[in-house]
Length: 161
Image (tube, rainbow, N blue to C red):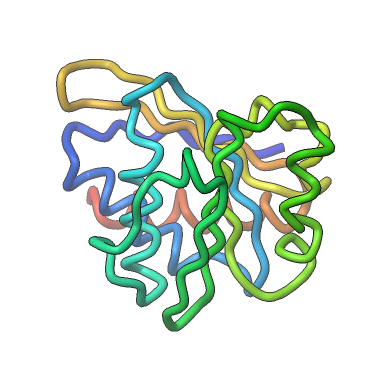
């Protein structure tokens, strides 16, 4: 298990992380997003989407529709588990196809459906540390996400130097 804590002082720093994440992601990836309401989960997905060639303005929280699909240079599946009643309802969204096929699957409120996550996934926890600042902690769960966290750490460390 690899872990990387990124101090984001503002939305521009969150955008930097999202772009670095998009650049480091393998062809198929699952990202489990956690954090309190208003922490910035959707904002991070917007930055990730921009890095995948999707207009970030088109990315909105899928709370009421549960799943949004965005197509750019890469396909982005954006799911929200906040309103799902149980694991079965989440699985009925067809998430296993998203997890297995090419594309990036981002799940907001992923802690609610943790048992459904693929074995190898990236956990991204966003903690509010100030009015604009956040600490974004990326934790790997599996060998593919281990390499992803290492690459992310390297990319973001180079930019701070």
